[in-house]
Image (tube, rainbow, N blue to C red; front, side, top):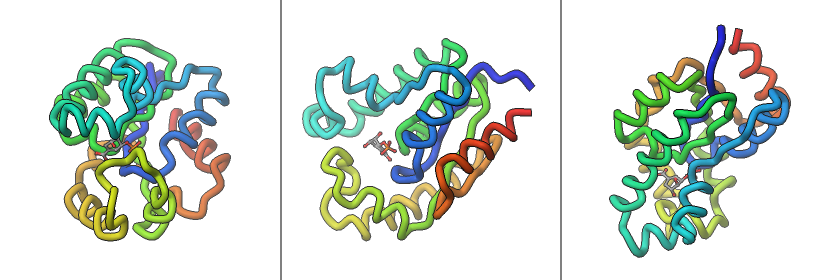
Length: 167
Ligand code: S3P
């Protein structure tokens, strides 16, 4: 099968950036992190965008960035964990390439995001907030073509797993 792009989705802390950049390197494709592009365009960190424009303002920028990015090809695109909340983004992803959902256990996610100051949705009581995001988004990533667990799996093995699903 011939895919234009690979789109990584999943909750924060499931390894999208780490896996995405390695995968892009292996394929010789470009790596795009939509959160980083949003920050560069706005000239602000994600946490500042949330503080100044609210979550709704961030979501608007996120949807525009996803639409714009997925017009391109030969890219590994890592998306923010909440990008799937707007079904139009999901449709754009499915049209734009192979959609891969990364998963991890609650404990793994908590450990991976615990000290990150730039993730406003889990500021404060990390355990509690990760738990409630997992619950609220329980089925949100099910539309992916492929689902891969990253808990205790070395990045190289995850990359090989995704490559093998590209056909
Ligand atoms: C969010 C996840 C973040 C970022 C923003 C909102 C979410 O991206 O887009 O803080 O709603 O889950 P990561 O999944 O890369 O942390």
